[in-house]
Every structure is written in C-alpha cells, then in structure tokens.
Image (cartoon, rainbow, N blue to C red; front, side, top):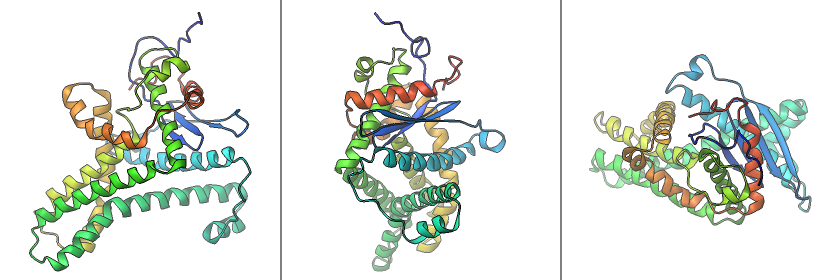
Length: 324
C-alpha cells in the first residue's frame, strides 16, 4: 500500500487553489505558485511554474480585489493558453505568419516585450468580445425593438435585456461545447474540478481517487461569468428603470461604467457561496453549477494525470495555508 502524501490528504477543507483548462493541459494557481502543465505530442509533460505575488493594499480590499483578480486571471489565462497551443502543436499544421497589429508589434519591439504586448492585447480583445456579446448586444437589440415599439415600458425593456443576455450566454456555451477542440478543453476542465475535489476531500491524489469525484465545482469560472450577467441584469432594473434611461447609447455607456462594480460584487458573491454549504448557498450557486453541464466533461486518465501534477506543484509548503 502506498504511503499518502501529507500535503494531499488529511482533514478536508475548501481550498483557494484553482485552475483553468488549456489546450492539452491545465493551469493551476495556489497561494504561492502558479503552474502550467501541458501534455506534449510525445506524451511527456511540459511544466512551467511561476511564483504568485501576494495582493496588498487596494488589491486586497473586499470588492476592489475582485477587479484585480479578474484582470490578472485574464492576462495569465491568455498567456497560459497561448503557451499550451505552442507546446501541444505536433507540427503537422502550417505555421501561421503574423499579420496586422501582431506583425507590427513583433517588428518594432524586442521578442520578449512583443510577446507580452500580444498577450495583453489578446486579453483585452477577449474581454471586449465578452462585453460586446453578453452585455452590449442585448442592449442594442432592445433599443432596436424600441424604435418599433415606442411605448415599451422601461421595466419590460430591462427584463428583455436580461432574457437576451442569458439566452446568448447559453447558446454560446452550447455551441462551444459542440466544437471538437473545445470539447477536449472542457474535458480538461472536468479533470481540473475533479482533482481539486479529491484534494478537498482529504484523499490521496491518485487517478483512481480523482476519477470518482464530481466534475461540477461551486467555485468555477463559469459560475462567475453567469453571476456577472445576473448582477448586470439586476442593476439594469434597479438603476435604469427608476431613472427612466431610454437612450440606447447612454445605457451602453452606463453598462461599461458599472462593469467594475459588477465584477467586484460578483467576486465577493462567489467567495461567499463557494465557501458555504448551507441551503441558501446551494440555492444561489445552483444555476452556475447547472451551466457546467456545458463547460465540463468527463476526462480520461491522461487528463487526470495532468490535473494531479498541476495541483501538486501549487500546494503551499505549510498545510492549511490555502484554506478558503
């Protein structure tokens, strides 16, 4: 019988360690380390670790810290995703040449600086796309409807915006889950969740133990995005309706201005419901957990091995230092 690793087993507790699924890999982050583990075409693992800076000052204050966490997660996530795409490439495809702004950056900056700028640009574009698709587009659509239905009540417009936001989000997740490449990424997403659950249950991190765990996790990024949409719907109803804000462009501008508040509130909401197991918390996180039916799938053993390796690399030296 194998001896249990004391850092992987013991009294169960909720951990602050979390991760992100990549192309043929997983990124995990703990209180001290961030690790990116990618399965290379030859079957071996490419491992990269980076120390994590502790948040201080404004970045550690409730509601404000969520904004910093969101921004750093986007940048680090895009960086890890680009790295995983490069490492997992088997070389059978044609090498893409840089074009447009990417080529201009590469031509005018040193290689390391250019890579950093391209990653930052990709993160900004990703955020802008999400804002445009899930927040601004529904506002524009309801504004267009308002041109034909001039007597549409503002409360109904706010509700309709909310319905469109949720519908677009669900359709987007469904379509992504049907793509072969993304489906495989979502399998790694399941491996990430199952590995964390195994650790939180105080079990030794083995493929057998991890495989038995559920793939839905209450502190998932899918739940975070869903709550962002719900909070934006709530603010639209309680702010735009009483103030009688009808102008579509003004509504879009206010949505953008409210976004930092929405992110901050959502982060604290997820911290609370993810750290409690009462009936109220289970009810509040139920929609986000259901959404994970689209973003997580059962992984194979090779994927689970990647998740185990990534989590082991970020566990803190002092047991319990990662307690939620």
